[in-house]
Length: 324
Image (cartoon, rainbow, N blue to C red; front, side, top):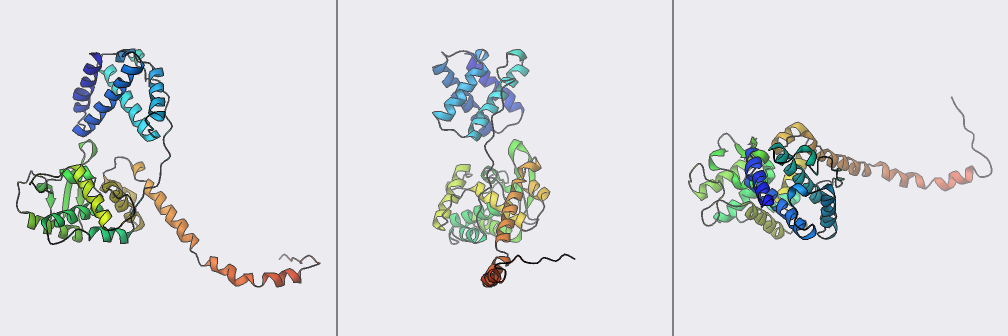
């Protein structure tokens, strides 16, 4: 009884008061019930106020060995558990000294990898793959163009409302993580593609989603993921392409074009500049590749033919070195 009450108290009261998205709250609830299921089997179904750090450490080992979770997934679970108990303490249902995660050791984070991106040629193939003679084709072309042209998330694309798509002044307004709104400018090509789709789609209520499915309802986040994957296969792009990879590609191409990190941070909706700095590493990799292509690599061929003669010239005596 206490598990269900505390989980409901955390998700429906604490998380809702923080303004978290319903999808985020649902993910938190699923994580907590997964931990509760583990405790039910492995620890005789003890109450949440009887949990110790040892139970959480054993759970982490279970996630690592039995469920093959990586470090990032495990860190997410531990963070949710920490927030859960911190909220229960704050709401007065648990003494601070009884919080099993108050001094829990920090889990080593997974090494951060450079984001995978598409080349400009691959992007061009992807954007021109949807047919331009059907409403669905024009819609899908508009979705792909908007994802790459603005770097918005799939969820932001799905929730984009018609009233927040101003094609005259060329901007859209989306609500990102935590409900934080931001306004993003559109360039001429993105505006043209969106305008064409709006014309063939027809008028709708300003409060309705901009992108519509065949039934006339708004598209889901999963539907947008499916569209991206489908056209990547049709374009014969042999990479795992997703809306998030298009977001990485958007940011990486801006860095290579010389756009500053602060501007890219605001376009992406990052709250911290540290989240955006990963794209500087991409630039560093580009610089190393450029250095490897420097013409000096060809000079070794030019001077290599004189090396044998130099060896013979100095054979039997040390070379005289003059200073000054």
